[in-house]
Image (cartoon, rainbow, N blue to C red):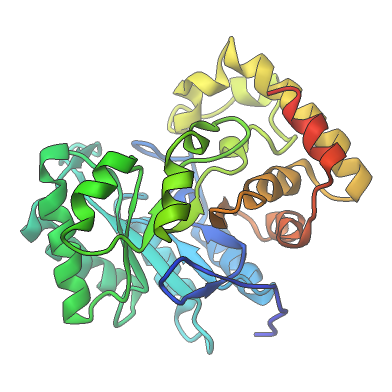
Length: 318
């Protein structure tokens, strides 16, 4: 498999050198609870292979995405690949038996999840294992201790969390250092700028952000008509950001991104991703690719330098 080169940056104190853009495998799990609607596994595998050919060095998935389907697809795509990318995955969300999510941070549950993820992914060790959500909050110390135990056993190489706030990070850091953090961050959701990104930067916690394109809102491909036709098993059809009054504001923002993209000869999605990468705390952005053709237009974000004029034009609408 021919592989091109993208620049890399070090993820916090992990020592992992990652490309600024990573492959997000959430949508590869298909529909269902918090799913993205129908998805063909063949297209998913082809998208992963195209991303690897383009130089992407890491894939982020989770056991909860399609309740194992995303991890199985990633494992299938990586089977036989000569130079395996880093594989990041997450624990703490389980199938409640009815196809809906339940949360668990109990030690035995986390250990069992890790074992199942390793089998689905077909790898000997997970490069980065993360707690998906800090729920139930009273159990976050138990869950974090389990991740530290897995690291000691060599089943995972690095450990981190997703969706934690600064207070929760302080609570668990006495058990084991928090190596990475995965918060939502985009022009459509800038809450992380207030406290969590500055905290991570001070503490040398490596940050990879998710939903940098606002779950598709900022790609320029989302219209009112397309949103109205989203399938019922696509979680976005029920999300407040995709309904009024927020929808109009986000569509205006997408139009401004389109104008900036035109000057750079790129796509609004690439501009949206590049905007997140300009924050000094952010090492990488997770971008969701469902088809091979989606990869290259967004990877342009890795080398896109936004000017002060670009930033002023983008942020005035926000």
